[in-house]
Length: 276
Image (tube, rainbow, N blue to C red; front, side):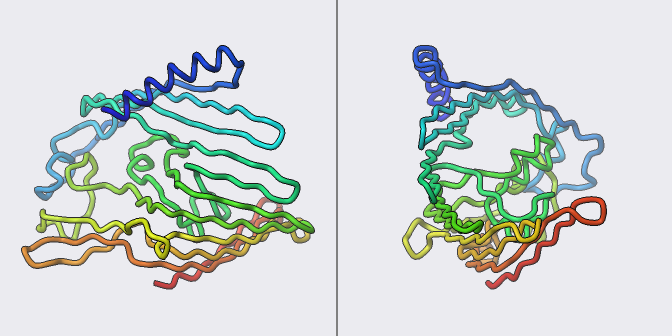
């Protein structure tokens, strides 16, 4: 609720500043609802709400986007207020908030940003950055599948080739269906209700890092990727009690992709090697 009030106050403050300075402002209002047509056959105790609640999604959403810019800089902020009609809660979120700086052969972006790698089309081999699978399964627009990362990204350009370096000091996990939520899912550890999650704590040696080398070769967009960080979906191991410990194993990814026009359409190829 405090976050919701903060974003709401920010909306009004930005609107007043924009009116005086003629800053570009965009936004929208959106309502979404998803109703369960059939009930799950059975729900374990941690998922009993998924059997009792007919609505998977019922919400109203308001977004405000502010994007001032200068000759060599630009700022993007996307703030949202969400009213959950099913849970009776109001929440606020800064989906994106970053500063872009442009130099003759270098682009720098710092702040909360959505990072997308690979060929797209819901192929996530080299795109290892955080995602919201609950939003995707519940029927929200596709943009809500990708979550923002608090990151610094620098992209250098020379001789038709570009190199992007990404550093993410703060880990952001995937949003997955969870016990106590509205989505029923297969849980092989459903009998263990006591659970704890170990997130990678912020530290220099636990900073996620990524490299992307990309360019156009003969009309084909080609990229090479390297990533060092963690799985964003947790693994689990039972502990005495019993209790389930959820943790995020270290992960290194090396990959490549090409995309271009061929065979009367667009051909995309992406491959990756996972080391954990």
